[in-house]
Image (cartoon, rainbow, N blue to C red; front, side, top):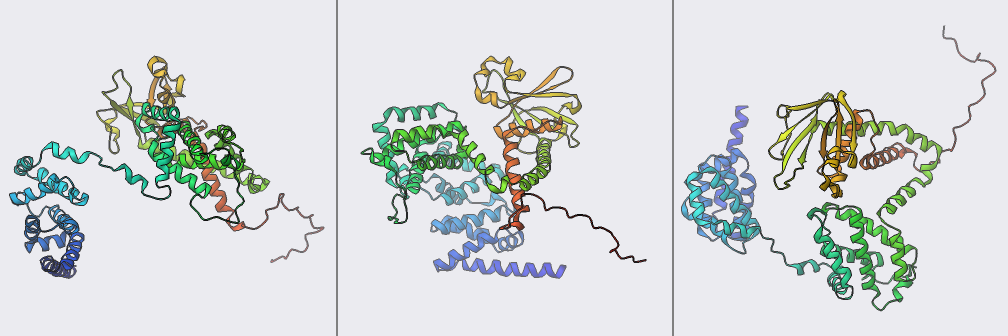
Length: 517
């Protein structure tokens, strides 16, 4: 063991010596490669110790102070320096004032490279956290105003139209909508400006992605395909049919976004639904744009979900009696699996926001189920927790045996009491209450729909009731479909009989059996 450790130190010492020589070489390419390797190896404590013992930190500091390094070479130099200092072998107080000024200079530059800015800020942060004297030096070099400048989002909107498709075609569509359908454009903008930030539909991004999608559906920009028989007569009913088609579809996208109560994270899901709505409507061959609008009105989000379910269930494989029987046998196992997942999430616990008269002063409380599934522990918190909250911090508890029922939405006591909240549909959809003896309630408002489904399902499972949330139905459908496909994998291309084979008649006698005795 001692010999292996000694060999390791020798190897690391040799590597440190070679790298130190290479980063001081005259060849730029050789120096850059050495700095790349140094940045990677500096995270190793043994290598770091050897390199620092050879005055490597001082060498890197002088390279920074010289101001001769820039771009990629400077970024790797700063990375290696920060990694070496993070081991705590050398005190931060040993850094010179010229080094601090140089690092501060990178932060103060208006157009500095992002990688250099990030590493410079990290070095300054470490200085402030590890040395009281350096705190005052850094404060003299950098003001709060200079730091705030880096928080602004300097984005050039023209860059959004560089990728083709759709390129400038998306901008043309947006301009056409704003000029010739001004009322529609204003309505879409005003609708989104009045929504909560998380439910805002990003108009620019939607317009660009929608234009790209329409190009793919209609094969715009592709060479003529002689084998394609698609013909859409509605495009011959208007002088600006393409732009009008876009205007119809952008209104559809905004409508579907509202129906799905989507957030920024749901952007791709919304676009998939919109693609399906458009392709289904085009498949009906509407003869005019007005007919297209009529077809799209009938293909709202709930109708798309119904059609998906209907098509999935209408497949021959899923209608045969053996498959239906297999599904019925699998379903209890999957439901038990979902139940266990819900109960495990309740054991992890969740943080809930307290609703008061003054929404600005937010307070939080935490609730979790005991590991034996017999007690609900809950208590107030000063702030939203970042990790697991121990049972010791949760002073109140409710035995599960005392719980009488779980109510949701308008039936919740805290929704009846607060008349102002009755108008808030979102809060109403996320509210649920636990009613327990003697005539007490524990009121919840989930942070999102997912947590709402998890908790209402888990509480119903605790009470031995059916889990009826949308999430359970979705999970059940997905998991059963996956399990059935796995079980039927070996039967691919084999016809499954509709009925079991007939049982043969009993033999006239059983004298054919052999007696081993």
